[in-house]
Image (tube, rainbow, N blue to C red; front, top):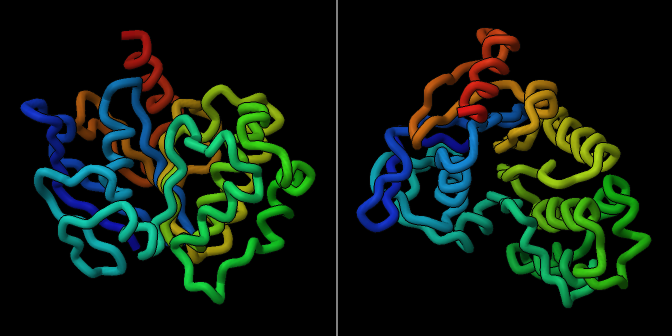
Length: 235
């Protein structure tokens, strides 16, 4: 559904990404891993249309994409949950969710029941301001807001960061259910190894803006992958 080949990205005179290939398929989770500062978030921003690529090819449903804005990508079905959540602290939970309506035709601007089924706390706190929620509740809100847009591709940048274990488990169940539905491609940036390994179907490990390990789960050794990531983080 979303395919990128030989992606490069520059910030000014600095090259951040060097020839990255990544494919996100419906019914599968593609995990992007690596230590801080290796270019994972830059890759996600590129895929979401927030930063123009310097080179390489990007296609959605087999259709090549030129220089395209984040708004256009969202309207084409790419939902993005950024690192840090980026919810609107002064808006209520319901109002935060309704900001996702901007990507939808007027006739589809409603909050599906599945949103509150997946994240019951959001129904309980619908009239609370986003800034009054705990970190875990804000993360649930950020994911729910992306799902409001009816994405075909969901980009998740470190959804477990700073989150308590019970909410991590709930978020994992929601991601697994979305994957198993079979009609959504998911790209997950994650440093919590067990969480990523349990959910992932394919893996991309980055170092200094380059892919150093890449492939389907069945061709990778859990212990070798864990050891490689642990070594990068220690360095």
